[in-house]
Every structure is written in C-alpha cells, then in structure tokens.
Length: 417
Picture (cartoon, rainbow, N blue to C red):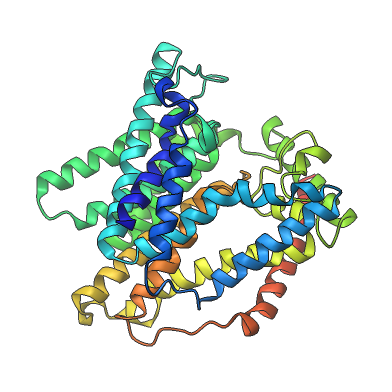
C-alpha cells in the first residue's frame, strides 16, 4: 500500500493536477495523499531510523526553525515545517517504499512517464504558444510548467534525471522491441532537454550519456562520440554562450557573491530559511550557496550531511569492492549493483544542473536522499561488507567538508567576478 501512495505522491508533486485541472482547485489531494502515505509509513516495520540521515534531518529542521526565529520572525517557525512537509514526506516514504527493488524500478518508470508527458506539454506549448494542460505561455521562447517546475531550467533538470533512469531501464530490457522503444523514449527526453534550452540540463545529459556509454562501450567509443557531438552542441545550443561575462551567467555569479556576504554577516544561523530574496533581488542560483546563506554555519553542515550520506551510500552500492567482480554476485546482489549505478547517474545529473539552480530544499533532492537510504538498507543485506556510519564520528568530517565547500565557492566567486 505504501508503494501506491509513494507513486501517487510523486505524480501529484510533478504533474500538479490539483493546480491545472479546474475541478480539483481547492481540493487538498496532496495533503490527503501525504497523510495516507505517512500513515502507511508509521505502520511499516524496520524504517531504518537508526541510520544517521534521519537524526540529521531532525536536527536540520530544528536549526532551520531557530534560524527563522533568530532573524526576527518567531511566529514563522511552524511555517518552516509546513513548507518542508512534502519534501520530508517524500524522503520518509521513499526510504521505506523503494527498499523493494521492484518499487525502485517502478519509481524510475513513474518519473520517466511523467517526464515524457511534460515533454509533450513543452512541445505543444512551444508549437502553439500555450500549454495544452496548464495554458501557460512560453517565457523567452522556452517552455515551463507549474509548481517546482515553474522554470525552464528546473524542467530540463527533471528531463536529464529521467534520461539517467531511462538508461537504467534500457539495460533491463531483454526483447529487442522493448529496447528499441526505450531508445525512442530516451530520444524523446533528449528532445525535451533541447526544448528547455537549459545549459545545466544539457551538461547533465552529456555527462549521463558519457558515463553510461563508458560503462557499456568503453572510453574510446565515448571519446569518439564526444568529439563528434560536442562541437554541434556548442554551435546549436546555449552551451556555446557559457562564459562568466554572459549576462545570465554574470547574474548567477553576482548572486553567489551576495550569498557569501549574507553568510559573512549572519554567520551562525544565516539570514533564515526562504529569506535569501529579502536580501537580494535574485535567488542564489546555486544549491550550495543557498543553504550557506540561509542556514549559516550551524545549519549548512547539517544540510550537507544529508547530501554526504546520500552520495556515500550510493557510491558504495555502485562502486564498492564488489563492483570489481559482478559475475560472482548473486542475482539480488547484482540487481542492487545496477540500481546503485543508476541512482549514481541520477545524482550526477542532479548535481551538475543544481550547481546553477536553487534546488536545495525542493522535494527532488529529498526524493534522491530517500532512494539512497532505501537502496543502502536493501543492498546491505545482499552485498558483502557493508560500511557502518555513525553520526558522532562522521560529523567532524562533514564539518570539515562544509568548510572546504565554503572556501571553494569563495575562491570560485573571486575568480569569476
């Protein structure tokens, strides 16, 4: 039952029928679904609450609430929990529901299917000047949707993440006709990325196809393909305009600088959750700078800890010592290895595109965190020598990583300005 609510919540958060279908206006479908999903989660055994990410999340929400209060709005503390509720719910539910490899595969299918529908919406929107579902007009010749996808770059990021999942689903197909259909789906998603004209999404797609191709065909084939395709991309897309002096890029770098200034002026708690635009007219346009500025030195390491565990869990599954001898793995262990490599590709797509986007607190990153927790718990039972992580011993390393990230971003900004 929890898998059904997990799928339904994903569809509601991505396609937002409650916002684009007049008959559903005002109907609390997301809230009801979220409540049912969390109820199912409560009655599920072995939630994995002993793992560090759950305690980190609790600490993070507490620090975020304090940060809002310290910055002058104690009455806004409950609002932090309310706004984060869908993201927290998807983290908790995905962490349990997707532990079954079949549900993980189903999640990949739901994301790809939703993305395919949104590519169609984008294509019609661009061809006719208005969206067939949302009745939204393109902005600056680029498509977008509603909710967390109300920006062409966010839409492109979703397509790039789904492209990574489609490469995984392609590898699972045995019949040539199904493989051909999956290749067509990958082409459709690639077309959607081109429609969004998002440089971050294009870079993500190139990276995803490069890594996936290297795993399957080797370095020589990938380098040959890159030599043929990259010049075309540079001339036919906005990738050729990617330089610090270009207006859009310059605006992002300026926002990064302002974010670092906010951290300097409000070092402990930052400027408070969702207060970045109260101090600067643009958002941070970087998923690292935004939590630095809004959460400060107390909250940013906790936020980074969630990302750190997500990457560490997934990396061990995908590229741990067992990855050197896949033919000796049992079928269940091999399935976990392939799923981990797929999730690593999705994290790659998300990370590259998020470097230019303010995705730090949106449900997409919490979904990836939940999927990583689920896969780690499942893989630990079938793969040899699973690592043990303890928050008490990991926090010093995470705090050091947070300091390094801040220094690196400072150097990057100083070089680019």
